[in-house]
Length: 348
Ligand SMILES: NC(=O)c1ccc[n+]([C@@H]2O[C@H](COP(=O)([O-])OP(=O)(O)OC[C@H]3O[C@@H](n4cnc5c(N)ncnc54)[C@H](OP(=O)(O)O)[C@@H]3O)[C@@H](O)[C@H]2O)c1
Image (cartoon, rainbow, N blue to C red; front, side, top):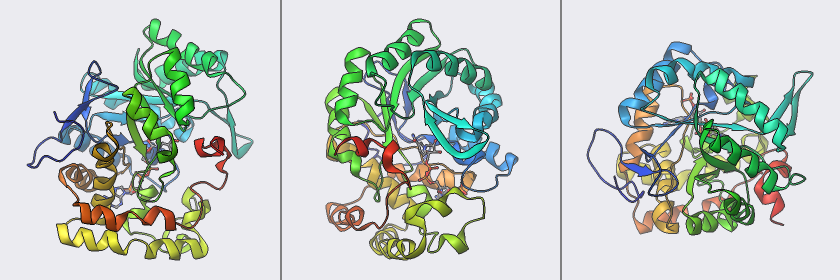
């Protein structure tokens, strides 16, 4: 166990931290994002994905992240046999709040009301094949619904034993504080990477002050930071959701690919990959901002899982951190085509 900086050397299982403070469960300092197994990033081979989950446990990557929206429930169902086999070895996180309409595939509705939350948790419990969710997140915020109602309803689920801890995703620092006053929040999950640093406006400081664990999602910039993409039209399959992401398309993609030069240079100096440098950077935010950071990179391949876990043992020097500092400010394109669902849209 360390203080969350992830800087110890050696091999074997990765370091651990406590989720949401000293009384929380011990989890690996890096978690696993399961989303891409079921949707968004192209086709998945099931056996390979199951082997990747086994690799996660072997590495000590124990925070397993899903959501009811991923594959419209398919991701939770995919995880169920793994959950059954390893219930006490993992910390299982899922999310509610995004409603889909089969007739309008691109449509996303946000629901934060009590009746919806009570219904959503039952679906997640059933699909995951468990009677308790370790960490239950509100995936997106509908500002029309008071946080007291949403977090109050989530707190009822804790009292009833359906949920152990609460989390929020894509909320501002002020919203995190308001929610935490209703019921302790164990984790804030928002996008944070070398390419996406808007959480540093208010959310990071609030999480540090309240002792909330920060769970950076898309820490590899949805794969872009690995250096794999220069032209989404050529590099990605037709059904890949990133084809519609502003940073992956047109001139933006070419400009953003050029921003990776310092990442490549630092990777070469460490005998590491660009993906590992991106993960080491976000992990080191822990020391920079004084909070626990548990990124959840997603992959469907054992070798990449092992590569990503090894990044928890990498420490970047001050000079290297300084060389990486300007990147986020130079990125072309927003992180989503529609930014109205993100916390930054409510920060002015
Ligand atoms: N709260 C939210 O709103 C929200 C939003 C998005 C995501 N999330 C969560 O965050 C998790 C991670 O985010 P993400 O999957 O969007 O993005 P990510 O972790 O930044 O990147 C995933 C992509 O990188 C590739 N990849 C992973 N490791 C690699 C490596 N070492 N070398 C080369 N390529 C590598 C993966 O491909 P392969 O699979 O082919 O290896 C995949 O295409 C998700 O799984 C989900 O649980 C939450």
